[in-house]
Each structure stands twice: as structure tokens, then as C-alpha cells.
Image (cartoon, rainbow, N blue to C red; front, side, top):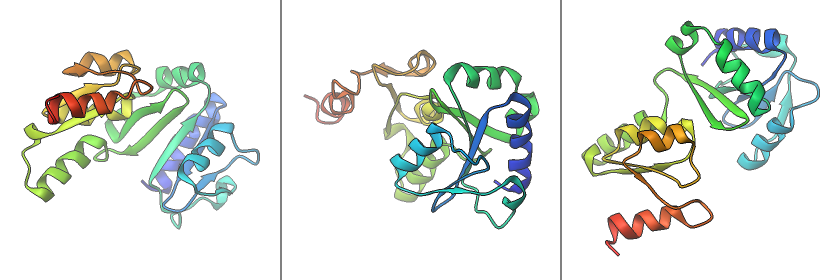
Length: 184
């Protein structure tokens, strides 16, 4: 991701009157003087600081891991409905939470990460299990030998999964481990 990518996505943010932030390896950068509650949440869960930079201070000196449009779920649906085809052609676009819409390098997703891991440890992809609940999990769920949706997953994730486990609160991952790995 680059400054040019930020400018492209930020133009959408401005047109639709929503919010954006940038994840870097060390912080969350926002061009909004008052950071969104979702920017603050992102910083809290990743234990990194929020840094304000005005639009003109965000340049190629920033290490862009991903750019996120953050807002209420209904507003993000409006953004999704607005996005032109070229955005999908140039980026991996996924919701990682109802209020997070992520824009990543086209080659960056959990599926490519799973494939890279398998290549590194010389494991066939067919021997893997991937468990997820949000749209950012879709690539790995489709690619894994066994794609599993959490019981509380989005319907779109359940639809592409081979198996639906229990919810997060019901220890769905432990259920998958017991059922498919430990054979209990």
C-alpha cells in the first residue's frame, strides 16, 4: 500500500463523509482531528497509539499496512454499494468487523498467508483447517482443506464453509480441535 492508494481511498471517504485510518507497524494514523471511536478501538485492541496527521502530512514516508474505512455498519454498506469495480480490481476489500472495511494490497489476504505458511513448513494445504467469522477470513476458509465458520459468523462465511462450529462464547475453536484433530 502506498500514498497513492491512500489518496484513492481517501477521496471516497471525503465523498461519502465517512472516516478512515491507516494501520502501520507501530500505530494507527488518522487524518481526522477527532478520531473515530472505531479508530480508538483499533488502537486499543492492537495496543498501539493513535497518531493524528493532516491529509497533507500523510505521504510515502508512512509504512501503509492497510487502510480502513471505519463507520457504522449501515454507512459501510453505503460505501460498499458505492465502490467502483476498479477498487476491487486493485485491492483486497474485506470487512473484518461490522464497522471495519479494510483495503489491502491485492495479494494480501489470509488465504495467501495460509498458503505461504504451508509452503514454509512443507505441508499440503489440504491438511489445514481454517476457522473464521468475518469476511476477512473468506480467502483462507475457501483455500483450507477444511473451512470452518464460527456459529456466530456472517452468513456469507457460513455459505462458503465446509463445517459450522459452535459460537465464540461456546468455544467453537476448541470444538473443532476436539472433533477434527483429537477425534473426541
